[in-house]
Length: 173
Image (cartoon, rainbow, N blue to C red):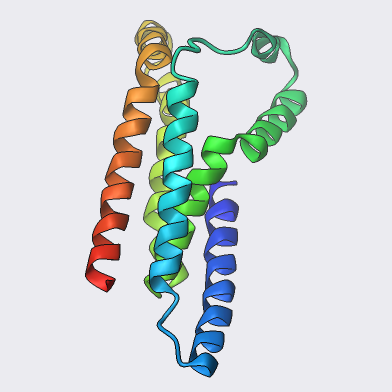
């Protein structure tokens, strides 16, 4: 899902950037790079505001408790649906894909982001597989910490991407 999201954003940005470049060439205007950077920056600001507004929501929603008692098929479908319709994840994937495309980098430059994201998502499963029951207490403590502090980590990552985008705007302008 991560690979599909960043790839779709990368492709859309390449197509729209190409159309804008063709139009600006015909009209003898500047390149579309700064416009893409502004869109990326706007997405980052929206993402930061969404996360800020949701910062006081700790813990998973009540309905999510039913996943622990669900069969694997139902849990997989629900997880995929949540991944597709989670605005913060969608905005993050759109931002990463658009940034890579804006710099005319090939698709494979998205691979480190995808691999790191998948690795981070797999940490709990890997811990359980490798450490068994020893991991249960540690994972519970990690979950408690994440429920209260994940928004801070998200805001720091967004600020990092926003800084890179602002620097791109300064360099191009």
